[in-house]
Image 1 (cartoon, helix red, strand yellow):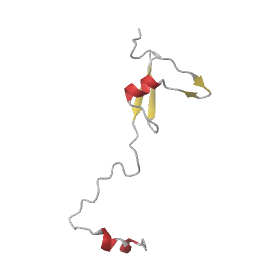
Image 2 (tube, helix red, strand yellow):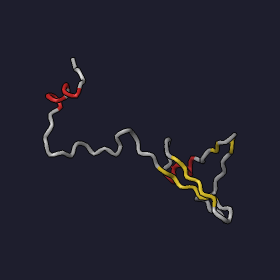
Image 3 (cartoon, helix red, strand yellow):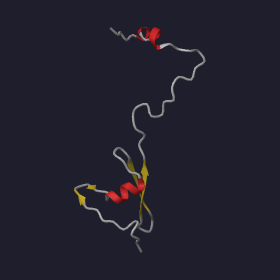
Length: 83
């Protein structure tokens, strides 16, 4: 039995299927997210959304050391020349 909340159709083309916009919005699926597919013993397919953190430094909280840093004086010591 399906409800209006989950009742949606999509089309398979080659080895790809689209996800209806209403489902993407409701689940918060964005570009770069992954779908984890599980086939249950009774033939039911379960899909888990694995949301991708954006950006290379998404998990980076910054410098957490005890020594203060000063980018204006230490920048060149890291081998980057600024003119």
